[in-house]
Structures are given as structure tokens and as C-alpha cells.
Amino acid sequence: MQEIDYNNLRPTDWLPTSVKEMKALGWDSVDVVLFSGDAYVDHPAFGAAVIGRTLQAAGYRVAIVPQPNWQDDLRDFRKFGAPRLFFGISPGAMDSMVNHYTANRRRRSDDAYTPGGRHGARPDYPSVVYSKILRQLYPDTPIVVGGIEASLRRLSHYDYWQDRLRPSILVDTAADMLLYGMGEKTVLDLARRLDDGKKISDIIDMPQSVVLRPLAEIPQPDNANIVLASFETCLADKRSQATNFKHIEQQSNRYDGGATLWQATGTHAVRVNPMLPAMTQGEIDASFDLPYTRLPHPRYRGKTIPAYEMIRHSVNMHRGCFGGCAFCTISAHQGKFIASRSKESIMREVRQVTRMPDFKGYISDLGGPSANMYAMGGRDTDRCRKCLRPSCLHPKPCDNLNTDHRPLLDIYRAVDALPAVKKSFIGSGVRYDLSMHRTGDDEIDRANARYNRELIEHHVSGRLKVAPEHTSDSVLRLMRKPSFSLFHEFKKLFDKVNDSCGLRQQLIPYFISSHPGCRAEDMAQLAAETKELNFHLEQVQDFTPTPMTVATEIYYTGYHPYTGEKIYTATTPDQKLEQRKFFFWYDPAYRVDITRTLRRIGRPDLIDKLFGTRPPHKTRR
Image (tube, rainbow, N blue to C red):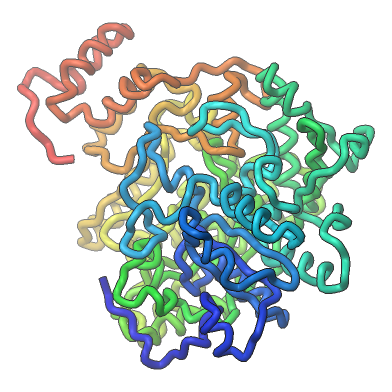
């Protein structure tokens, strides 16, 4: 833990978290109270801080109640009273259920977004718990939920932890409205409408919002309205849920927001208004340029917040991801189209980091959701407006996609040229299928090859993390990932650059077991192929179904939403464990079970490949 220096800052430099802090600002009341499932870190990587600072910059008085106690006399929910405009609920930068439970549904013992990493500071589903408490205490004050938890549950969804289909989370909460996706523009739009005297019940068509309406308002389907199968129909027919998801994913990835989605649920209609286009460069710069202290609130003095420690010297350069991986929720929340900051905005933040008292000269990450999508997008935006592809990279990179890595190289070099910076690292995941794609444009291809070399030579902090995810082409197709042969190509380049530069860096691949379409024989082959590459895997995980991914829909329904094809998925604990063991073929504890499995699936040829004739040796994992 590095001690934080608060000496040059005042309590009023943060948004108030107590009545005392509110009065120090000269306020007697507030316009908005935000309840956050995370500790309050005044940094652009923490959602409650972003929303609070956005509203503050527009002239609104905002207070934050971080991690309120929902199990006592509810004093945390009462301390600011009723705000003039609304209560906002930001459950956390990480989904509460992923935060709380492992892929085996076991309770985690820590929480990276809580001081000291302690668990138990937030409930499961804070959107539901917080909103019901607020509704009980303040029946007439508007309540708005947002953040990733609500965003991914805006329509009927499979809940892995309850193992059942759930309706829109808005139905389960006591909230008046759900704001999905990145929230700066929508929360400001809402605040201004309420400030103008509109009732929240009359705000029904605001972009990127979800509201409950009478069933009678469901229109006839047309180009502007898609009527999904009802929640009750989806409960009775899993194919209908799969079909619904295709429309949901396509519309959430539209360039211009797409159509309004409607779903009958009980006595209400869930209305999902279209997503806003990606933020302009000016808009995203304005968000990142807000006066963040970049520090945890002084109330946490002397305590460590693990999630903050990870990003304290990092800089995020863009939002959005056009990879469309089948198991990933980034595009469902941030959108498919990239919103990139200007070089000037990025450099301002880098300089701010270098002025931190604990900065030792190393930028831990110049990244984003995918590290190397900065400043990329379609050359012909008219084609993008018509496109319904969930991925710009799968099954192969779109011929309209600009993959020029020169803007990234320009920023890397500008950052490294700062006297206070010894080295900048890329800690976010790199899409090597993007940087290695041959475009046919010699200038761009040379620049991208240069990017790969400079990345490996100058921006790796000992270990470069990449995510091939699997070795089987059939599984990778379902994942919407490139062939493993491309990883082989990238590894050869990585090893070549290391050798030529006298470096001893490691390439760390991520892999997933039990993904839809993956069988034990696929994992056996993965074990054999990675052994041949001399990997003892450490960055591995079981597939965890999370709402709003195509892989989760396959897991729950058994059908691919786009093709209707029936897909095998490992769902039982035994099936999952059988697959996961192959990651650790080198552990003697698994040798007997793996051998038995290989004989059962008709692959005894792999026994010798994995174990040979020598006795197994104990290998540290």
C-alpha cells in the first residue's frame, strides 16, 4: 500500500458524503443524492464519481452516499433527506453478483471496491435493495437506477446465480427509471427535464432510458418499434428468449441508436428507448477533464482500496469495443462504436498522474476496454449506420474498418517523451488479431507491424496479457474469436522481438473452459497444444454466464440466437470440473482423472502427449 498525500487538498475538493461536508460547501440541501455500491474514489474509472462530477459541472448540487448500511436503522439513507430532483443508484463499477460470487457460485471473501478489500459492504443486487429502501422512506421522490448492473438487466435475462429467467430489473426495483449504458449525457438530460418542472412519469421517450408503461401502449411493430416476445412467453419457451436476444444485441450495437424495444411483462410494458450514438471527442474529453482529485475520499485515510491501487497511475484513452466477443458485456454497456479522447486530453491526464506524490515514473496502463482500438472506426459511416453485425472483427475484420495504429503510436511516444515518465506500459488486453490484420494498404500494414514491435519492446511490464480464449476453431467461432493459428503467429513475433532485444518477457494467454460449444475433447486438445508451446497456464477461468451476452443466452436456452442451432454446453459441476482439470494437466493430483477422461472420449493418443512415459512432477501453479 502506498500512503496517499492529502496535504494539498481540502475536504471541499470532493463531492460531499456527509451533512458536515455539505454545509462546508455552503449548501443547506442537495439536488441529487447518489447511492454507490463502491467506495467513493474521485476518479474517472469510478461511475458514481463520473456521474456526480458531470452533474456538478452543470451547476447541480450533488452528494454521494458510498456503500450505505442497509441493515441498520437506515441512517445512511436518511442523512441528506429528499433531494430536490432525484435519487440516483450506482450499484458499482463491477456487477454485484460477479463481485460477490465465483463461477461455482461460491461467495468470494473479498471486494476490491471496498476499503481493506473486505466483503459484505454491499448487498446482492444493490439496485433492488437500495431502491426499495428509498421508496419506503421517500415515496414521492424520483428514483433512478443505472450502472452496469441495471444496464445488463434492462430486459428479460437469465440470472446464473438464481438459475432462472428474470424480468427487466426495473420490474424488481422500486425505481421510476433505468438509465443504461454510459450515463453522462442521459443523467444530465434527465436532471434538466426535471429541473424544468417535468414529472418523471411523463418522461417516457428519453434516449438510453428504460421505463414501465401500460400494456396498451405497445405499438404495432414497424421500423421504429420492435416488439419482443413477452417475459411470460420466454419463461414457457426458451427459443423465444434466444430470438429476443438477437434483436436486443443488434439494436444495442446500432450506430444511430436503432429502434425502441418493447416487452410485455406482467401488467406492464418495458419500454427501452434507443441508445445514444457514441460520444464525440469533445464530449468524452469534457467527461475526463472534470476536476477529479483522482484519489479516494479522505474518509478512507489509511485504508487500501484494491481496485484503486490497480488504476491509480493508469490512463483510459477510449470507450467502446467492436470485438463483439460472445462472452463479453462491454459493447452492451459501452457500445460497439469507439469514443476516443483527444491527444491533448490524454496528455493532460498523464501530466496529472506524473504530479502525484507517489508517482515513480511508470504509467501502469495506457489503455481502454481493448487496449488498441483507439481512434478506430468505419471509414464510411453510412455503411456503419446500416450495419447489424455484432462484431467488426468476426468472422474476419470488416473491410470498412480503419485499423491504423499510428494514432496510438503517436500517443505512446508523446507520453514516453515527458521528462517525468520513465516508461509507459499497456496493461489492458491487446487485440492481436487487430494489430496483425493485413489490410492491403502497405503504409498502414507497416505502421501496424511497427506497433507490434514497439509494444513488445517498450511497453510490456515483464508480462504481456493476451486472450486467445481457446485453441479449438469450432469453439472460437462461437466465441467470435480468431483462429488459434494467429496466436501462434503472434507468439513467434513476441519471441523474435524478445530475442533480438535481449528481453526475458513472458506472454500470458487467457483461456476459458466450459464455454458453450466446448466439450472435454476440446479441452484435451487445448492442454496438448499449450503444452507444446511450453505454457503452464495460470490465467484461466470457467465460463460465467452474465446477462446480455450471446454465450449466456446459449447457456440458458441451448440455442444460438442467430442460427437457431442447438449448442452443447457444460452446465453441471461435474461437467465443468472435467473441463477445467485440463488446464492443470501437469498437476499430479489430476493425472488419473484426466487419463480416465481421455480414454472415455476416445483420445488415448493424448495421454502420451500430455504425460509421456516419465513420472509426473509437481509443478507450481
